[in-house]
Image (tube, rainbow, N blue to C red):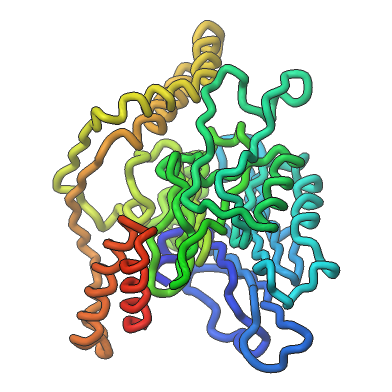
Length: 424
């Protein structure tokens, strides 16, 4: 619940909920919508497989619409254009695709990739599309980007003089679902955001962890020209509640003071942020007037947090990376230069320029903050949280920190999962 409360909209994948467990799913101050899990026709016992949910803050009720649900695990959500700095609605598809060998949903009964392609064709003309979830697809760093052709589709491709870095991935395995995912990207002009965006650029961090190893199976899909609307993207740390690491990304949001005033009593902590989370994927929409170096939890609690000291330190060994980042924004900078010589609003131009500078330089600097949270509630004071719980959690965090620094080390992975099981 603490993880969900950091976001305004939360997508959950592989929830395992069924008609028998459809209880106590409400979260205070959130609306919710669910798709129950499925079970193989030959199975009478055991848990259900799959299942997805979406939670969104009560004050966003009039801006969020569930436009389509498929029982097999596909949900399309529309976010009103009133939330964003661009004049288009946003359509987000939350999806759970079962593993390749799963018998819960026969391949001849339902094709997830065809369903996604149909949905993309259906909603592409209605607004901006983002697809996210647990796709159980391993595609390594296989190319998902069509070569630029000015005679085919100028809007949907990267310019031919932009320096395009290869998409990175720590997962070097390609499976059948992975090939299907790449085919989907190429046929719909979408690309995988993992390994391209912000803190995950050049990394392609793992999103799934088990005793047998780690992999990348959870994704954000979008069109290349929509990179400019993504203010942040990161893979979250592994936690004790899931085998997946969440994905968090933020979308440029406009400053709508009237909406905030109307909901001031119900939501004093969101500060124009609309956010999304999942056991596998988390999303965030942030006001582009906010400091991009501020974390989501900082934004959600800024009425209760004060910063004693903020130090920003330049990393000189990343100069070449900064040059590549600026080169990737050359088209946008050229457009701003043209606008300066016209009648465009200088404030809008300045904000766009600042946003480019912040996005390009954010991964080249270190920000050290000292913060004091006046409303901090110590979880250790729970009556059931004894010394054994405290020590188990402490050892789990130490094992997790070592594992996240070297995820290919089998010994560290085994120790991480041993501590995780003991903590649970």
